[in-house]
Image (cartoon, rainbow, N blue to C red; front, side, top):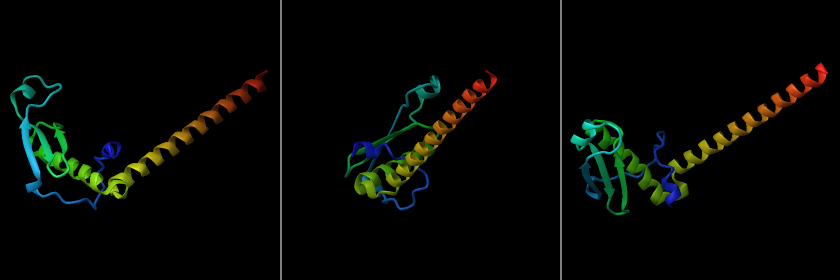
Length: 128
């Protein structure tokens, strides 16, 4: 189920499992990464744990504690949904659809490259 959790963080999912605040454990810690003094002084990184499933999410995407709390809850909700529903989850279905689109785009690009290559070869033959 670990690769399934990688699919989380898709925006358009509507049918997600609801989280209750009683099931959550929240901590505020110092973030890591670039930012220097701004990151070293403030505890605006949110660590959110869903107690029943044991899923932990760490969010330090913005400077704002409130925004990080909101984002962490969205990510956690999607991961919990994936954890319980598996392949039936909307998040999983969205991820599969986007992978399929990406593969199709890659296939078309490869075909176009082959066409261009053939066209250039034809031009070279005509010049000779």
